[in-house]
Amino acid sequence: MAGQHPDLDPAPAVDALDCIKIVVNPDGTVTRGLDMPNTPADPDPDQPSAVRTKDVPLNPAHNTWARIYVPRPSPPPDQKLPLVVYYHGGGFVICSPADAMHHVFCSLMAAKLGAVVVSPSYRLAPEHRLPAAYDDAVEALRWVSTTEEEWLREGVDFSRCYLMGTSAGGNIAYHVGLRVCAAAADLEPLVIRGLILHHPFFGGFRRTESEVRLFNNQTLPVNVADKMWELSLPAGADRDHEYCNPTGGERSEEWERMKKLGWRVVVVAGSGDPLIDRQRELAAKLEAKGVEVVGLFGGEGDYHGVEIIEPAKAEPLFEKLKGNI
Image (cartoon, rainbow, N blue to C red; front, side, top):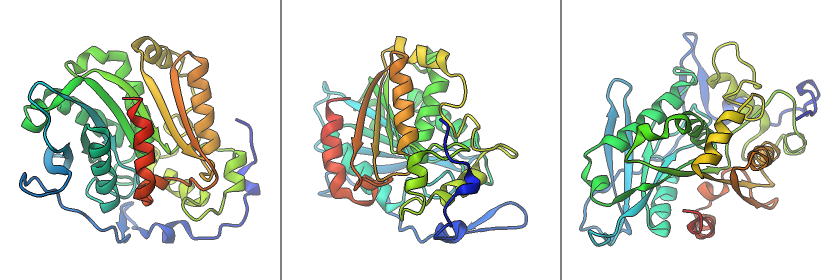
């Protein structure tokens, strides 16, 4: 996708590191200062909430864990629920499954879709640059396929699994899909039916029209996105690296596998997101390769991650997703 050279960017309206409240330390680590309220898990079956939640450890060596969301009332023993494995956003450098906004989004998802949701954590950059997050995300998926965790074994239809993520989590869901489609049988009894890429976080070196037009938008200024890529990509890589630019490399083989597996790829995006051009292009490339694609593209008022930030807008999204899981 040819576009404007970054040297012609508009003047940034914000300082990228200050915007996300990150201080880069001399040793390459960062101090995260963004005040993100957390919500504790609530496994109590006597609480009146629509969803029960609990946290489970994944890999103690990496300090990774997952939050499970189960809708109530519990279905009859003979009725199993679909499973959504959801990866949180945050540009690979901030956030966790316990953040209040992700907790609310996943709770609504479980309740409105009638699905069990598993939201794994992953190691953050720059202390753990990509592909660490992808490695952790695949490890979490393998945990799901083998665990004896009762909330999953008792209530999940493992033949109906969907990988979903928001922003950087959408990028993760896409790259996990690319990895596991080559050996889908290794995840049995887990059967992945598709990907739900919710405002996926992609980029590239040359600017697209939407990146130029929305360079200084309030939700995801483009220079902030650039800084997140700088902190998360492998050392020495630029934004045309395959982790960042989804159409910059050769993916025909993986896309062909997705097609043969019958996966449906849902791309959720908004015209108010500077990344919309890249999201549309990926959807078009997948569709051209014969992958079943559902594009849920909103208007100018739908900015990056809008349904996370405004939970009232999540309910209409989940109504649309009902027909795709």
